[in-house]
Every structure is written in structure tokens, then in C-alpha cells.
Length: 105
Image 1 (tube, helix red, strand yellow):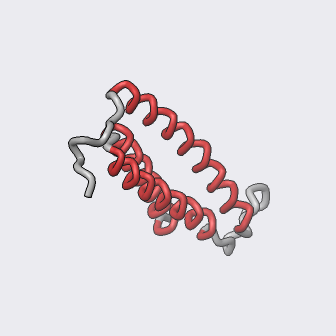
Image 2 (tube, helix red, strand yellow):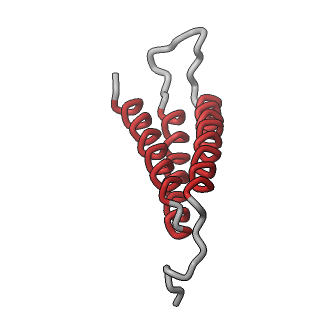
Image 3 (cartoon, helix red, strand yellow):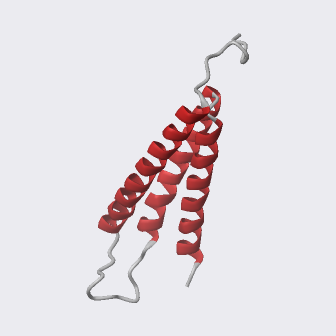
């Protein structure tokens, strides 16, 4: 087994840089997931229909949120504390966005 005290850990500054880069990637990929869900739904922004389903939009964002939370687990195993909390915050925010969208008005 590997002893956690002997594994190499990044310095705090490197961890913060990693967290910022991952947060930027999360923002870009969340926007891509939102657009992908919009492409798979029958929502027309210019001609709103009361029966159009927005579920594919929020489902694609929720799937991406799950990927973000799984990446937090991998970062935890690497010992990157700041990056883990940043990913947990981003994943929880995306899940909250999806939940409000699905069950909201």
C-alpha cells in the first residue's frame, strides 16, 4: 500500500493555480454542456412554445456536474485540497442550477 505521508504533494501556490485553471475549464465546458442540451431540446428561443421540454438542457448540465464531482475525487487522491474544494463548489453549483431548472417554474 502507499503511505500518504511519502507521496509528493504540490505546493499551495501550485494547487491554487491548478484550481483556477480547472475552474476556467469548468466554466467553458459547462457552457458547452448547456449549448449541447439546448441543441437536443425542442426549445426555440425566438418563438417560445409552452409545451417545449427543457429537460435535456438541465440533464446535460447535471451529467457534466457529475463529471466535475468525480474529478474532485481524483484530485483528493492527489492531495490537492484547494482544487478539491473548488471542484466540489463548482459541481454543487451546477447540480443546484440543474435542480432549480428542472423543478422550478
